[in-house]
Image (cartoon, rainbow over all chains, first blue to last red; front, side, top):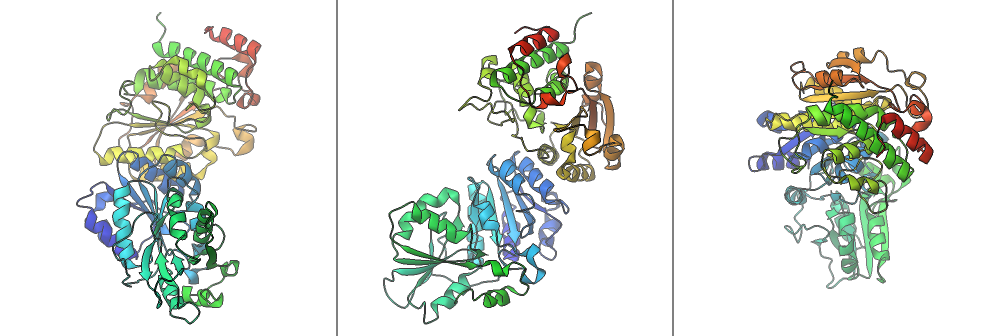
Length: 295
Length: 271
């Protein structure tokens, strides 16, 4: 996903000369092509995420679109107040690009587990979360980010997923995208994902237990799009939300909150990472297996 | 001898600031008084701006990082015709834009602050943007001394110096008092000039109430090529009102009517 993101930047910079890529001394073997070809649009802010984020707001306030790039928690939690006060409150055109979302860097330990980021970012009123689950969705999200010109959180998982889904081109703010239909017609049950867990949802659908669930994804969401959810939720009798984030405060919580605002009778179950993953080391697949993520 | 216009402006800033804080029962008058001369010189002699066209592209950008002292900035902007002086009575009032930490919703304010350590990184971003756009406008940012405890400032200085942002002027309101006690008893800043110089900045230490010195050192002509400029402005918290000077309680307390009248009398303006 990181490479697709950089390709998107490379492709669009000629037509969007106001794009700036600012990295927090990370991106080895990813960012070099952009750095080499567009040196005046590239800055390494050093290992200083608070300053990187505050500066990004300052640059954006003068008409630039700034992408701050780092791993997991570094350009989110470390500089949470700069995101809150400088970017979100002033509604500035800054995109926070966080790689290794979820357990992408599972082997690197708890410091690198980006599993509380949704909880933080979805509490900001102007922030839109872009959490693609496939390579195609990365491109779709990038196009939307360019167009929206407002605070954005672009969560890139460490997956390379070329899965083709039913509604390949439809990635609109707050709208669910159909990924895979179940074997039965007019199913009233679905698995709703966000981020890099689409393959897990497909695995679930391929099992006996969940064969009658359709699979959907919501790659563009946030506080601004809550009002669009109740109508989509109401079409289902049962929804299982699936995310590689801790179960508290994340995507499942978001859908539960949206549902609570209505008279919907839809039954919602949240499948997410539990607190046992905190401190657990291994690849994302090993950790997911250990906690029986999709059972 | 004719009084400098910036001195007259600073007196009015002090008077309005005192009145606003009294009427709103608000805090932070001590720090507002310590920056009044700096603001007066900036807005009278240094900054390029157009109050009738607040987004004027070639304006200089001023950021108040010590946002809690916004009464002085709101007063300055009103006195320089950004909005009616009557608007100052809206300070902290329900539904108004004049909140008691500086707000970008107020005409002429570039950036909202309130949490310390945010203004300098934002200002560095703006200075970089000016260079990227090949513009001549400059960025001025005013920090408190206690605020220098925040690590984000030192991150920002490293970047500004590395990228040779000589269009950035950082002013430190060095009144030697922070929230609970003195700087000396909290986290010692000295040798402050050496610290800034060692970060690659060009640092000047001046009397922050002397308009001649402020004018000279804040001048855009007075700079060293390729280096961010730092002005350590030695100030007195509560400056201009004898019973407020160097008293920590005026970081919090609001003057009552009698104290207000006394203060205005000392300033020589009974507005």
